[in-house]
Length: 68
Image (cartoon, rainbow, N blue to C red; front, side):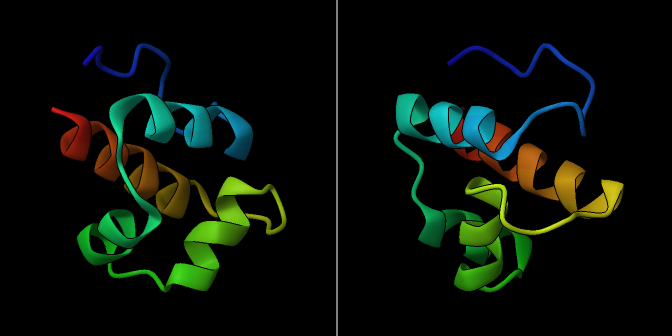
């Protein structure tokens, strides 16, 4: 799979969700990789919660690593 090309933190939940689908990464895999709750990751992917840059980067990195 292609690596993230944009700097971490620049993607919307919709863009992250699209990457997950293309990479066949599940919310459950992201929660286990990041330590965040399934509810939190879901809210991030649906743009329902304001994030710190650190949380955004951690979720983006998890998706990238799990897609490789």
